[in-house]
Amino acid sequence: MPLMTTKPMFDLAYAGGFAIGAFNVNNMELAQSIIDACAKEKSPCILQISKGARKYANIRYLKAIIDAAVAEHPEIPIAIHCDHGDTVELIKTCCDDGYTSVMIDGSHHEYEENVKVTKQSVDYAHAVGVVVEAELGMLGGIEEDVVGMDAHEYEKNIEKFLTDPQQAADYAKRTGIDSLAVAIGTSHGAYKFKHDAKLAFNRVEEIMKTCPGLPLVMHGSSSVPQEFIDLVNKYGGKMPNAKGVPEDQIHLAATKYGVCKVNIDTDLRLAMTAKIREVFATKPAEFDPRNYLGPAREAITAMVQRKLHVLNSAGKTDAVIAQWKKLGSPMPKFYK
Image 1: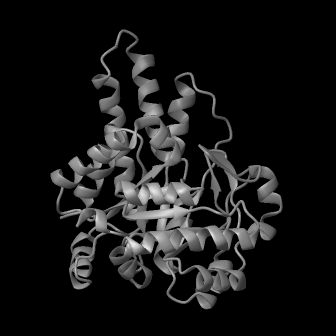
Image 2: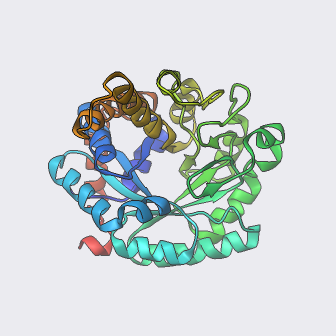
């Protein structure tokens, strides 16, 4: 089973009451954990490589790790996605590097400039068989190279930053995007909210009406599990008041609305950091990386398995593969 674009996944997810988990990959342990979880739950997945991950790990190493995952688990539909590509040049590079899906994030530009850079990215990517996600609206929080509004300021004035349904229709028509990342009240990072989150599902419903059939994407959707926050704080960390998106709201978005992709990064970092801290604190003589990265890998696998059930994507591998074959098994030109 080769890599694929997200199209066969989203074709089924939109009307099928599930979303695909998009998990960020920075090293081997993260990739192994995610793929192991997806294999156990028979779930398709999207492996995201951000600009920061490219800088940290080198795309050749990351691509080789993902190729190994594909060879090890040919039964899992996998897409490689560029997370928050901020320039047309980066999008072109990612397409040339063998990504099957890219995101151009022009949300920090004025609207017309966002349209311009998105259309340029779509024209290049579609010519080589790569699908494109773009963003409209603004999220709060900070994560890696992605800087949104101050989380508390965003929460107070959230309505004015949400994706406008009419503008979304114009944006989709003029750019030809394949999916749209919407601002509906989520936020990047571990400190998303001061109060309990409440996603703007009424806004999602409006966007689904103005953009019928367009797959929607939720960024900033880690739930920041309390058990990992507790472990981090117990063993020397300092993460007071960390709060994420409740899993019941993520489940609702995936099963009742047109959300086909949910991004999860912070939760992976928390699981890894929490277990490494626990090993260092309880076994101070430990210096073998296998003995602290191993428990971290196990914790991430268990957490991702739970997420796949939240997203309702468990058990969907066979259906996605069948859809991929029905479409003629399309692949970007770099895999042909």
